[in-house]
Image (cartoon, rainbow, N blue to C red):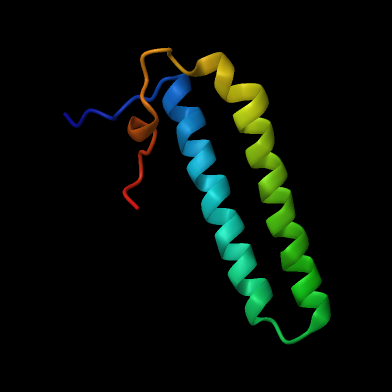
Length: 80
């Protein structure tokens, strides 16, 4: 029987941070590549929304779920 990996709250927050970063970079690249100003504005807006989500996670959520012993370099689940 295959066992599924179970994540705790801290790992979920860390993954959320990584996903918001990835979303920001994706939307920014699409905005930069867009010729139509409406598309550029839309994707720029989406990129800024990702930054706001990232701020909320880091400032309001992460402090509640990060163990004190966890090192900064350990806080990446997806290899860069």
